[in-house]
Image (cartoon, rainbow, N blue to C red; front, side, top):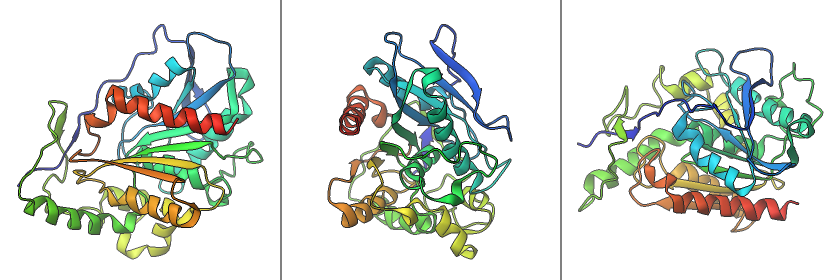
Length: 321
């Protein structure tokens, strides 16, 4: 049986000779509450903003993780500023605190936009995996006080964004293992298999076997993020699910997911888009499935797909001028 795989983490990207402002604190509770502002080499702004939210399963990685920031930095060539953020991980806090950090960072950007040549009214969020989860939360949390940090002096500033790009996100923690089991039947019984392979991949740890479904165990990443076993904390899980907060004023969302993702199954994107579009129309959430692509596949980072994502951002920000 084929093992689960994902992308190897690349090194931290150097900021040497890069234009911008780096390691700016947006909060005072943790060293993790910092952000970087990467600016285009030309122009005086105010620049529309791509807010980059790193993945790492809520346990690891950094705002300058090369493989998690480089796709967004392509936006510099189109005149976007890129703001990359760190947030508190689950070795320090549990839900909803990491989500509060993302909301606080958005408010910090808006509050200080003129100081840093940013356009506070044109912000797009973009992340993958855990960062994709956070990106989906930014689509729906603007009016949810659960995600306000009581220590944030900027709570009076709206935290809405203009559009969202979510790569292989979580939208409903309670469905993860069920969706993986459904997909494993297809993967294990397909008449033939087209494998997404690359020397940039490695076996998933600690649970790599396809027939093991890890999300409902007491020590799973999801349990550690939510604050306890998924099966036992129904109300808390519902509060943690982006799909719980869908509302009529949310921005448009582009979701991209791989059909071969056996870590965060593609149904997480499909179900979110189905619910949004059932309520608000076919084009409010667009979901694109990459055949056979695994979690964090190199397929998402081709020049063609990055261009496709940036085209979506261009259109949505033009519509939000």
